[in-house]
Image (cartoon, rainbow, N blue to C red; front, side, top):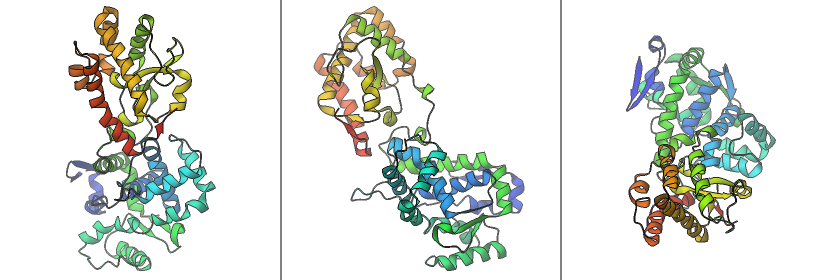
Length: 389
């Protein structure tokens, strides 16, 4: 049995349709005002999958921070867009940025490390976390109330809402969770036994559905960010495809001096890395037009920051033009260039315009700048730090 939501297919075992309101469960992500609604339900599913039957707002929000940490910190994803004044709209994003200010956590910190830092800075994070409890835990259940024909929900009183949710779950239809009476972050969240069984039996399908809906929301709120679906969790470094490019640049260095973009000193064989001009964490690809040899000692210092456009782009484009000239003049370099086709030459504009024969220096730089600067500017607007060295 499957519940369809537009193009989303949420598959739930048919036996649960007889005892649970699966249709209303499928409405829990409908029309969200803020992204943390997705992270709220995702955190609950993860906790239930781990065998937890009762928790607190505090623990659920810690799980939410862990699940959103990498996207916000590594890729500068805005969970609910930006306000007209440039402020962060989403409360979960604000909590993550606050923790980032308070700690030395890396963008790919583990869940254990993140939760340890949350506990360490409990007092400073309290207000940011408490704000996340105001409406989403209750509004997420609105589809159940609407399907039951109940339009008289008192949304402006947490005390009345808590009592209403408890009574509704007993007298009308079982809700996935109800609330205790403790205050603020200490408020209990109790999962219904039948819903626990359903979620544990269908965890993969439910998490896939949440992921799909979350990606759609995030892409709509981050229209300039490419490859967003790959930016929700740390990726395996083995996915990087730089070996053929390194062979290409080695062949070039054997024939021609290439000066480091950042030091303006000659690049030394066995003392260079292949790095991205516009950070990989933004473009999420290893396209040849964005890659350069650079001093190994500077690579980790640059990290995922954007190089200052002037003068570094000028030097970068000079190196790219050396590659371009040798690729057309030297058969052995052209062969190494062809070796990059599978992993590093997917951009149509690069193949049809940038690397075609016959470009003058001015034409080559014009094509490269025309295509790279909009990507660079998008990364800059997204909040990537500028590196001046």
